[in-house]
Image 1: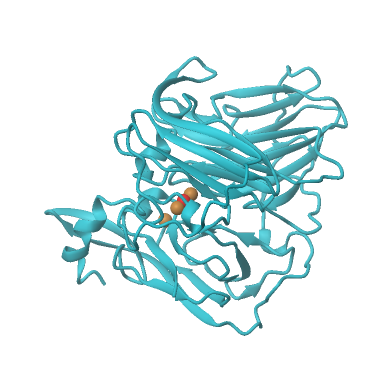
Image 2: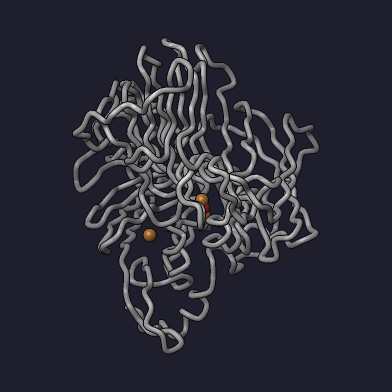
Length: 439
Ligand code: C2O
Ligand code: CU
């Protein structure tokens, strides 16, 4: 329970993930001096952003845009990104959500670097080893700062691709304070002219706090080709299936443009989405309900994986997600707990390099928790005692619904101090944050 609460809560209630420095801030990798294949500069600054409807948002931006500029790379490229802070008084960083890069580049203020304050800059340098859909966001005062706009997409294209899609569209959905839901800066229906037979790839990224976002593709069958930046094996055709993404999660979806219009409905209505039609005009097709929910545990076909449920695990941990109530400064408050504790009193999982690690995550609370592990991808072994029977499913942001219990496993192959936290950032700041640390 929260017997210790009066001691720990003071450090927790006003603290964002990563603010508290647990290890000396030192670089774990030496710059090689090698010339970068791609370089970007992102300037954190306040700006007024104009949405498609004409509404404006007082945003915190990278380069005056919210979402920030999309960074596109080829797999294997060495990238260098210079972050400058113009006027964000709280400080900023860049965390590369889903990219398993060296710890020193992970962008967690107070753990892997200090926050970059106004007038300062910091350069990140890493090799983009994974092809897929990722996003970047600040990891300092994350709850407020990500909501205000300090995020963007980072897409790593395969070095070689036999048949690249004809269109590759990033769908970053976000709810702007005072303006509502938008895809990028399109609060309303974005319209795209697409010819019959064109192959379209949609990269769904959900950046909102606190809610699960639902997506329906109306008028075409489709495949989910990747989850959390990792390809699925032999994905089959889906139709009348609703996709749900937790905060921080990503799905890659592909479809072939039919002779009639197709509509990507975000959040289940006609207000926000993308219409594809021959000339980009026309009516939004009606949903042909009912819609079943996408089930990643049985989708696609099994394939070789480096370890499975009956592999010998070097370490096994249990994570129980719950919530408790208590008093803080005379106010009644809710805390989101891991194993009965709030950060920084939550457990730290200690691993050795090379260990095969199994984690059981059980949600005993009444709300969903998308658990995000930095620096590693987790192979989902089972859900509620049932083994995954479809494609191998690697997750970095696992949505754990109330009552659900997952077994996941990963190889501890990326030394450092890593966060593991709920990506409903409200929960992360209310205690649901912990660390994975290499001995
Ligand atoms: Cu998307 Cu710890 O973050
Ligand atoms: Cu949560």
